[in-house]
Length: 284
Image (cartoon, rainbow, N blue to C red; front, side, top):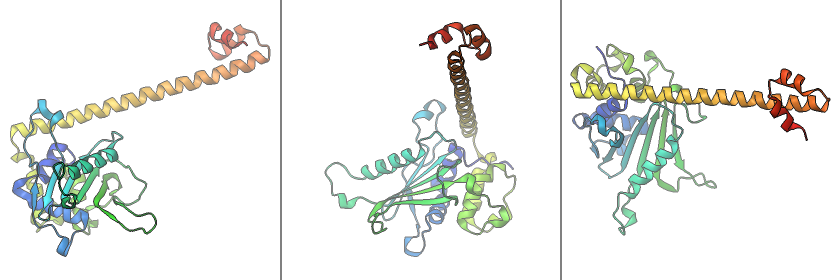
């Protein structure tokens, strides 16, 4: 049995943004935000339910998950597999945009509802040791959350080290699923007897996907691979250029010292590898 990798944007949206299986998203949100009793989410309305995007339109396709509960609170869930260096700013942008768009111009601001942002990243962005961190707007003097309408939760997958037999909570199981489902061939016993997990594995089962979904899934995986290689190549070029400039700078300093010692230019050329013209320009 082959499961899709939930870290793939299409697979993530198909699993957690599925209007036929809202129990998956509800369970995930409740576990991540630790909602219980009166705060527990029992129903959500998906703002952009899963649909198979067309490959030519992927750049314009919104692949994150947006939902509301019965109280009108907003939830944004975003999966980011590669580090492009701007994810925290994107999270602020998405959250503020969702907040502002609740009201047409000139309406009553008291009607604005809270926005929760959940970012799942396949890289490290903060110094905290735990894989999950919550970020609030806190009054520096009182340490109270006076501004309550924005809340950010980040899940850093590389920091999640638990094995199957160490999964102690629903949250643990969801994070393990997101991180490892693409490498599994069977549904682990730890996930049995829990409907939302069985549904998630069923949705992730690629044998039930149509050809168009598989094509887009593969396209997105290859596109990401190409982008990672492009970034790696750019980094290597930048590193090599930096080394080259560093060596040249060192040789110039050596040449200056040799000139002060009245060493002839030809000998300095041989010693440093610098051109005669470069060395002559150093003479003041």
